[in-house]
Image 1 (tube, helix red, strand yellow):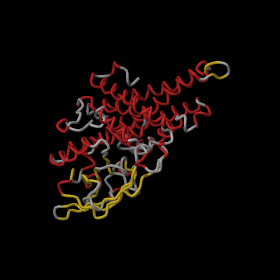
Image 2: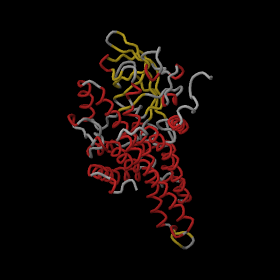
Image 3: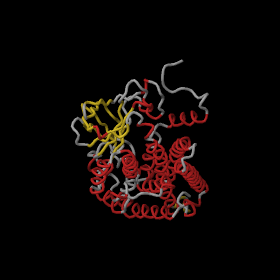
Image 4: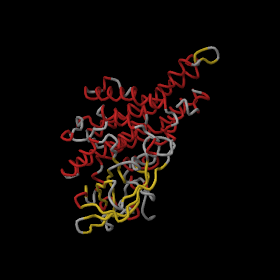
Length: 413
């Protein structure tokens, strides 16, 4: 499957083994002993601090942080493939925890690419010193969330969040919603309209905003059915003033953020694969131990057929994931379409894998204390992460048939 040594470099094999040890030694025992903890209604009390501390000790928080600040810089030729490998292993333990760390990795890359040296030194030094430090990417807004994933050059999809330059500060006003790590992050990369005369693709800028900035407020934690160890948040900006130096990219921020978006799709697919692998491993164990009708479950043809189906779907997802991640690393012209394909394919296939897992467990599959139903809840989240399935499919068709595909936004012709 995706983890077979024949496909891996020495670095990837080391990262896989490190991630696997962390998941098996720290994450899985925590979940087994705390089945109900994800339902704690105080978001800050859900994930035990030692999980991020142990991830930090294993070097899994520092991916993407420049080496001069103590981070781990991956081999550029295989970076997306390696991150996908690690994300898959982490999600095999818990997809919410994987998402917490994935956001940090992706934002670290953005900051290292675009932030001035003094800001990098300040924020990366803090990040490396504080194991609980999280980062968030503030793009999605309450209205027209899917518009941000296309984006079309029409006024109808412009950001509602605005940033206006006032002397040596930018004044940000607006609202962001469905932000991964948004509830408990310390540092945010925020996107805002800085030129209303231009379409979103050329009039949107990005900024670094610290949590303690006046006018910045986290207003709620969005309670989701799955991935609950990543606290999704809603944020408002009310005359939020940030220094001019905190501007990352002026006007064409969405185009420059391709270094975030392309690996992001791959990592959503990787998290889906990890969820499926976790469900598969638990189910294989169960059907080899459980006796029904006088024989072990695996000996029943109907059960064996489902196990084979699960394994085949996982193999197919792993193969497409490897292909898409390699396309990103090689700057292949079909990287964008492959990233959307693997995101959609993985999310749907893994939901089916988790359905098989639940049904093969019988009544136990619905019991919170067993944990199989958690895989299904976590898998369902990825159907709309980083863009909905339908919008992703539209982008696939648009890439394949640019002249004949329909328009998504703008006035009807």
